[in-house]
Length: 377
Image (cartoon, rainbow, N blue to C red):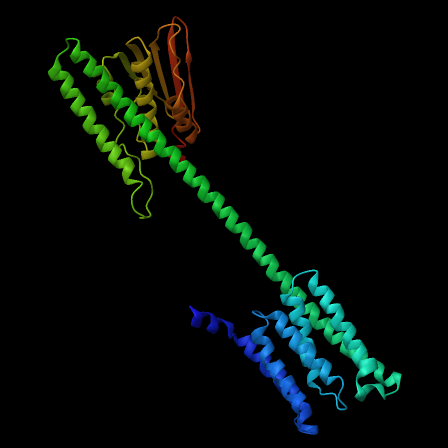
């Protein structure tokens, strides 16, 4: 891990910048001789591009000390220009606001004082001769600072945009997770409620004199089918394999649901209008679960009778289930009704379930078939 970080610190542009600064610092020694301050300038120029990210304060302080020492010499090295510019760039690029503006102002004031009042190589010159040096030095520092400021703001904008993207991605993940939890909750509720309702009805019938063989046979069939569907639901929770969530019902079997409900003791008048068109798995699952839950509610809360009508139209399916119920009995509100409405809304359909005339409960669903490809069970 340490080696990886060290390799990342050595960037090609940093190497190029260091070489340019060092070459600039070596101009004066060729003419005046290589002294201790020249060596210090070379070290600062060569190290600053590499140390500025991890230790910006140490880098800035070291460069300022060397610049201050050089300003007191008789022969002002040309390398101070490069070191001063990289120092201004580091201040703008790596220090936070408003600290960088304070430090930059101090650096600029020090530069003006050094070139106008301190540097022996310049103070002896007449002011008209010194003025261009002062103006040129200030201009270079301001340019270096502005370059660092632009880079700093660009990095801040990129970081902010990345944060926004991460938050959006997290919101998407949370929404998908919530949809998956709701999907699994609906599946488990519909499977367990329907099967247990039939099983309890069969067990009660066998206990009070009904044919025990038929009851056990129905219990076994319903239990096995429920186990198969529960395995399908639980398989969605296992492993990290990326695959689409497929419906757990291979084909729409309203006749089978009616037969199971009749075996559970519900007297159903069942009729079909039109012909069942080809449906995609999502629409198949939606219609299957809505009919299943409606029949389950009729068995649990009704008086044992129901009339189911399924009409297949060119563009939609109309499902109507009317069952008797005892006045004053607990209404059929709960997770099942909410789940049916959610399923219908997923394909831009509608579902109502409420008391009707003559002590009956009416559940009606209208499900558009042309939007079947938009189902998200």
